[in-house]
Length: 450
Image (cartoon, rainbow, N blue to C red):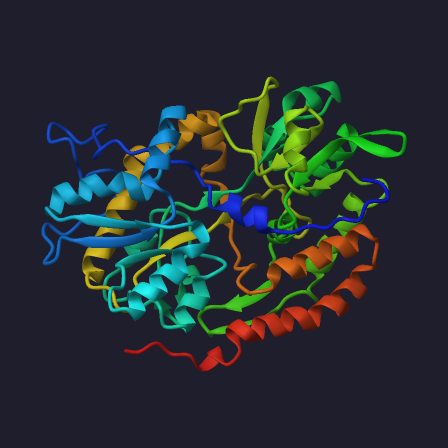
């Protein structure tokens, strides 16, 4: 790493982000569906009742996870679970219609849905996420859902309805948020006499100081170059550490309908200063460069990583923990960075009522089947740690602008070069302000068609 300038991109990160949770299709809920082989799971604690019948039982979805690929994943690990594909057989059995899925690449979902809508064949559901949530609202691609949803549709998870709203109109229905977590090499922690991150988290002590302590202890050098890194992640880990400090790069008020740069906040500048230390001559972070952190991880040369997921296929034992809490988070408070996922209904959808019912079934079945598979994949103790009642989830729309990848890469590279935080902010602020204006400029007056 010495003498080598970081040329980071987020392409690989955006690709890995879509590979959430995994998948599994059991042809209609046989695990708890009774003799009929299917269920709407409305009798599960926390579930919501579905309509008995639908005027239109047919549904169309644009989705990224190909069913054949999904079946292969299930063969490799029966505990992977895809909430959308799993719900389709149950929906068809309950309402007697057909769910048609247009499988496309992750980045092609919005363009595909836009083209379908422009041709008069809009799908009924599309997946939206932090990068595109507001864009699809402002472009008119999706419609307000207030007529089709209730507060119960937002009670499945510890996530506020406002996150999927703009100026008090709701535009998307969430599925279970994707957990962004650190996987760590227990052998390296044992070798250095370190307390495991998950043990610290359970005690409310997993914070940036402990993260830095572990990273520095694990890092080794040969001939002035780092041989074993303490931590590795994509460049977007910078955004996530900002969120882990209770802040965000963008300051968005969905109720008022405003957005602005938050670079000048103390939390963001403090995060930049920390990354200057962690990436500097005495640092311990490996920012991924074409898969380099995965090579280090597989070779036992990396103590902690974000991006590697269960199941563990390495020879060494691993553990998991959330991202550490920043100094501006209340001491002792347990927080977890989560990536929001939701489905929206295009403006030209033929069956919005059916789409809303399908999403209730998706979330009902997640409670009945998906949660248990997730617990089996992570390990029950890990699952209980993450989803404990005293854990707070942190979300942010930090990547909802066209050039955010370049902006974050510039911050990372400047921090690596030891540019002062104030100078970085002064240089980057005009770019981020311009970027925000491209998406949100003039949208304070945006009001959906009634």
